[in-house]
Length: 475
Image 1 (tube, rainbow, N blue to C red):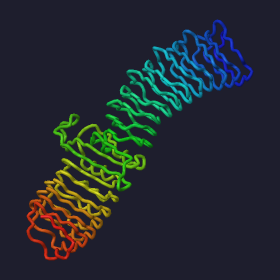
Image 2: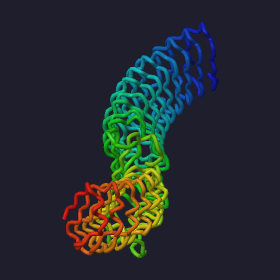
Image 3: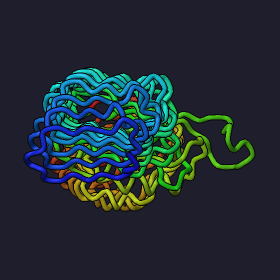
Image 4: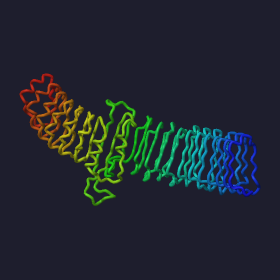
């Protein structure tokens, strides 16, 4: 009766285990006892740890009516169909593995459960954890029939969640605001509801899901984001921007799995000025709200998305950091729109850029580094009404095929170096009301097919323009 610890291993002929009437047993481990079918532990009310592993014929487990002492329970490779833990209010750790016949799991109404791991329990369909408000870690792996997971109304203590190869279609984590690590690989997952604020979230891995929208809310310390085989993903909302914590982009829209002319991604950034920053009302940094559209064929093929995740929650913008972030992403197409006051200075880092659009920006000057974009084919300035001049070396854009200036009302002169562009086909100067003349050597643009000068002051043409016999001029 005074026995406190009992280890039974590889007792291959053991069929019955009888406990004393008044048991002081605290620790019981039964391993590889392949003949035992029933475990009657009704009298083991002081049991603290119970381990039953690879007892493949166990079909019944009778626990004490009052199991207040039990804190650790591990059941592996058993044939239990129903596991009733209604009276284990102090249970903290529960491991269930390879219980292939398990259909029902009944948890206590008042629970101190901190760690729950369920692996390869292929028949369980519903997991009710509504009362597990103290849960810290939840691992559910290869429970192939699991369709419903009911989380607590408040999951404030949940930090680690892993769900793999389940049939869950919806997962509600709106109350799990202290989550640190999230790993989801559920083929049928259609909806994921995250907390609007996840100040502790550090790592997210989501694969093989049918999610169309992913909203991460405020996740200032997110360091690792891995999205793979999420072929239905259309929208991704998050704080994106510079890693220094000085820029806020919200929301970010990710589009994936649609035809694109190139294999590299596209970035469209729109800025709207804000008067003040609620967090830093007294600093002098420019303040913006950004809307970001990011498109990529294979979301996991580059580290671009990770570079766009921001650690900042405020609207104060360090323009130098913003420039480094934009130019640190390998892009095919870049569009900057809105009240952005400066063009990125490190444009030379965008070695593969093919299309650059500056729309309604407040940019006055274009950096000389634009001339290093050897693969640039399309360049557009639209409603850039503060743009005064272009770099003299812009003619070094040897692959440029289309050059558009529309409603650039402060632009006066076009550098003569554009006549060095060997592949330029379309040159549009539309509503550039201060432009009075064309470059003198425009006749050297042998590939030029369209010249649009509507809304300019141009009245005279250089004599050599007559060399361009196939040129169409739009007045």
